[in-house]
Length: 402
Image (tube, rainbow, N blue to C red; front, side):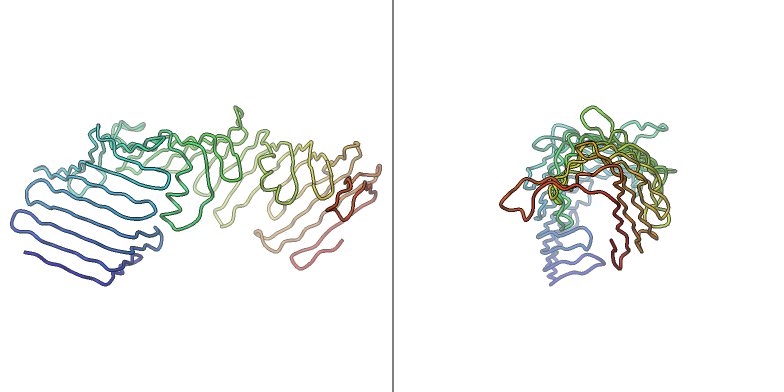
């Protein structure tokens, strides 16, 4: 018996395909199923140029299946399936290969490389030594004793996986451009499939997301009856930031000598560079929509450079975040000669809309150096400028007054 179906395309929910061929053939002891499909698209999961499925389904105890696909993250999987008299399913991976521009990730065939479950109960799923090795790291799936209770937990281990491959994998699957990243990933995620409890710990060493160098990041996440977790940021050996999740809709960020120089790749676009630190705590609540940020951050900036004016200033003061308000009061600004000015900033908003702002600078004690530029062929003006008095800039989304 043989049945052959030719389809010009298929559309099921968010999945669309191009031309597709399905072949069914067999007799009383076995059934062969073949599928070839082109131009497969999913609204959320990206695209696949070609898919091949070849399965030999036995009426006895063993079946074999081969799946291969062509995509930015291409690959193939071959496996054997057995069904025991007690209803236990066992899948043994024969080959697994994932191919990307960053390299090939292949199945380690020295282990058991099996996945098992009972009947239709997916919560009974267990894995033993399913390991993929790549150019620099490895990913393994096992079932191990869990940290809570007596049941075993499904466990995913990541060891030395280069972070640079992730934007390519995810970006290709989702058909979007993601920023280049660097560093290496190590960690473990475990879950109890019965209770849906789980935990994950991930360390991103030498983390970088172009053009920012971040340091080391440590993620600790737990879920089940509730949700909790934290992210720690280390620069060299110092913990400079901790962000804690207090539930599904709130958290807190603590800064301890957080190096403001990490922002320089962003500020450099405007010809601004700074050196200094930030200390403080900010609570976040996003239950009603956009995050509500409340707290106070102490800024110590011994050096703020502005290329357009040649300014070299120091800033010292508190940045406050309140409901509907962002601002700074009587912040001390010092020029290279030690002359002082006071900066006041008030920004009012309604859920981050309908902005209203007021910026004031008060220079009363002595002339304050605001510009110091040497002559240059590409400059319209140069020289040293001192200022005294008061400056007030205020306005809203409709205009500004000075």
